Image (cartoon, rainbow, N blue to C red):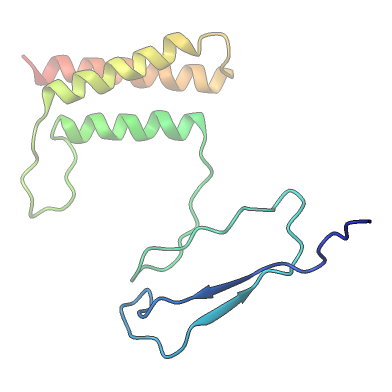
Length: 138
């Protein structure tokens, strides 16, 4: 006896009584999954924007972006950057030292695997952050 592969997808019935916005729902909704589920995009859903926010287009995640994000973190920890003019900057010298050490670890562990621009960026960023840290701790 031959087994026949199913040609249909499956149905998902949403029995939740409230929507994502907290509003009561009237009837259960059904999701039809008979669309094609193979290929490079299978299983990948587009991320949704948090409630109350518009979907933003973010730049791609790169090594350079990581280095600059960590550098900004150090500047916040040193109290040189603020979220707003109304807030007083808080200094976290221990956290700043730890983040600088993390950048140093990244420089060491990625040695020989970086482009010239990435190498220059991490070297110069580390130098500037270390000098700023020394000035702040005098």
